[in-house]
Length: 308
Ligand SMILES: Nc1ncnc2c1ncn2[C@@H]1O[C@H](COP(=O)(O)OP(=O)(O)OP(=O)(O)O)[C@@H](O)[C@H]1O
Image (cartoon, rainbow, N blue to C red; front, top):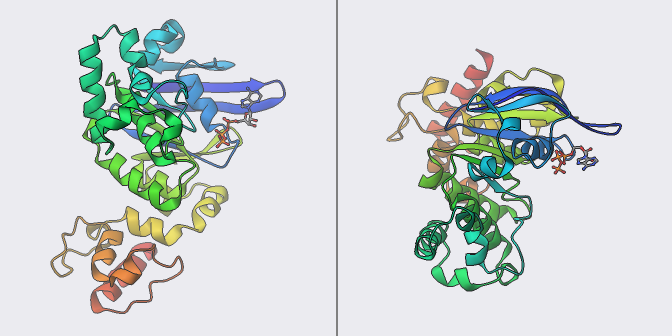
């Protein structure tokens, strides 16, 4: 669906992106993960033709995007900018109508699509008449996503879509986002520096450092088979929670734990088994202290899986 071949971008002496190649399949969610300044946003901006690669080429459905007019390309790619990028002097409805107007949709179609999406994102029709600064940060982020989805583009580019939110709101919006039926058939490329977010949302993760790819793989590959010390140390602090979220009970060799389905992640299983006070917040990074028979059995199976 999308392919980057040996793409680099330099700004004078600054090598923002250095010789990056990867493909993203149709319907896949790829996360660009890395610390500030590693080149994630630059990749996204090149995909959308906001900037040109210095060398290398980008393809959309096997066609070089250099041959696709920018306007046409952007109609097939919704873009959620860092800090939402909503126009402050436009109402929510006007912000959401920008692309449909370019596509010459009639007023009725624009309105009904806006109402449909705003409700899917857990806002109400009344919000359509407000200006961005009359909304909370979380509401603005929802509008930013709704705006990008208006014309139902097959590709969605998201730059830190849940940035600048407190951790609890961030988790809520992320859960809503995961459940959005609108996203199920889209190809999504999302930038984040939040490891948990990357592991929850990504089919694959591209971990970058100083403009280069350190490792590109599934969450499980990154956690259990880090290709460099950088990858291992980048993930180290979150190691246990990531393992718990990435692996299912089946994958650690457990087919029966009480009534819980074996396709559940270890995290979900422990959330069911542990008392709410322990399950609500992420489990301690170093060890799980609760000692019920099932929890012990799960942790033993995880231990065995690590050794295998
Ligand atoms: N227009 C520009 N002119 C000069 N240097 C730039 C420009 N845009 C980006 N850079 C540099 O390129 C590098 C990569 O920037 P980029 O914004 O892609 O990083 P990032 O990983 O998205 O960071 P963040 O998470 O902080 O947004 C940085 O060193 C940045 O200073």
